[in-house]
Length: 176
Image (cartoon, rainbow, N blue to C red):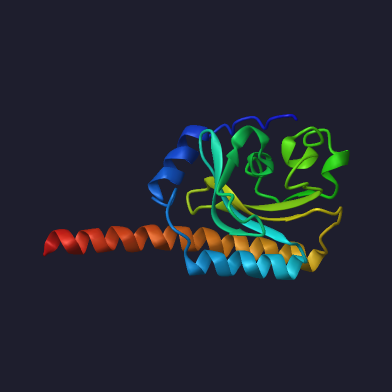
């Protein structure tokens, strides 16, 4: 596997991710709902809201990979997806030199198809992806790509709103 290079703004990106205060938190309905819609619209058995940390990608929301909460960053498709503002679509991972030797393709969960829309915060930091995965090769339609992009925008705003709400609650608690 060809590991993704680190983004040029990796330090800023990681600060933005950690500032969200979301890593290793419990599942939340709004994020679960977004990935369920992505999975249904794209016709895939797996969908994830993945946050790319220093050495891992961690799943805030997960449909289709029960019991899995993270993978190593160096084998993560999402590490490649955060390098651009565009959706990264891999129609057949066994035919893509970046992924064909990764354990995620060669073994469980047997990834063949991947499409990941970057989670881009208001400051421009791409902290993760909303992605869909299948065990069969496929391609998204224009409609599915648009929906996936819009869901990623909604997820990004939900992450920022979540952070703002936590900050507001803390402020109110200190004023009491």
